Image (cartoon, rainbow, N blue to C red; front, side, top):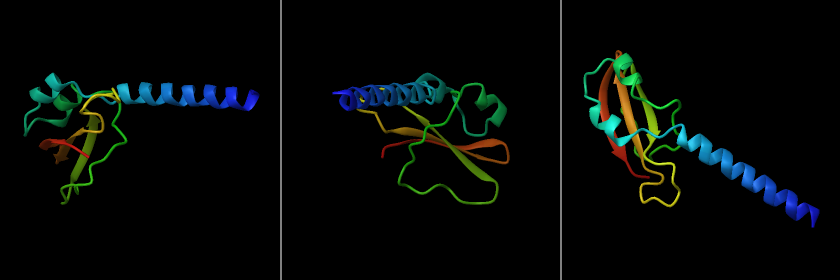
Length: 104
């Protein structure tokens, strides 16, 4: 009985940590709508959550010199239709180059 209880507690703790981490990477849809291509990265940073999501799209990233992309979750709710979907923001030379909503 003890191993089963330990497994249940560990599973609950890992699920709680996953939910907590996911909530810190959710980009509010209103903030996403405020982003404009060409904006300075510092202006964009003020609207972004604390961390990026670990989920990445199967679609390849834009390539080129100086291009970096960041990913943010659309929702932390596992039962939401948008679960697993993400926003991709790509920057070049300190400016927002593109913003996309991606599905897995």
